[in-house]
Length: 363
Image (cartoon, rainbow, N blue to C red; front, top):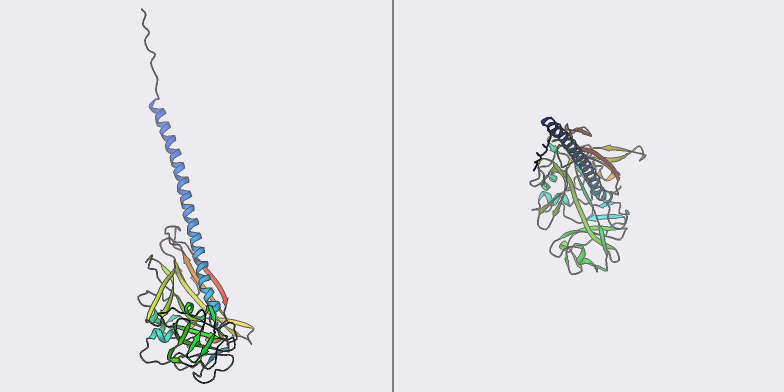
């Protein structure tokens, strides 16, 4: 029987294997490069979106309060405050019944009670904050950015309720228990669009009890009642990312003498606030920094050298930065006012500016 030898099998040569390996590596490198490029583009897009969202949101939050600054009651008819704290209230005026020099009060308590001043700003110059230095009582442990401005807004509430009855130191409203928490005194504004008054108030059911049973100088039956609010916006080191700054809102609980600090938006590096003062027979507006406006001496009720109540608009600028690092090959430098803000760690940054007309308390 004839045997057939098996045919020899041929494989790839070493050269062919090397060529295939090189081609495979080239393909893998190409795919990896495309993937890394897509990831970088995605991170860059996300960073840009984050910067724009935070910047616009910051301006929206502050802008909403700014538009209400110095706005009391149901209209802008309350022109200014009344210096008298007793007797009949004058038409067209708002009376602040809060004590100006009460013994034992803290600087924070004294600072927040200045409801005659709908808007108040501070700028750090010559190693001190301009205006009323008592604003520092709101800082607590915050590492406040001294290259940024501070703005405080005082305004009436967006929620109000009808006054059913006003007798002496008691105001009755069907929604009284919804205006003020039962356990905490709060600042109350009552108005009928022609008269207004502010008092420290507690609640018992639907009865709003005025501090010290104080008389408001007018019967506000059939008027409206709501809380008087204050809020201070500033830039300080973030509690979430200590390598960047954040926009903070600071409020104050008068009853407990407690400063309430809330980090609103992480990644706001700088804020500048300019105030529009009428000029040229009110045909033009000059924008100036807070330190160019003389302080209102609330304790002495002295407006003689201050123009805070004449402010008609506010121009606010801020720098928003991304929380992700390494998105820019070099650290950006953004100029805001007279300050250069260096964006660290390759983060993205952008300048946002908005001008807001405010109600305030015109003369």
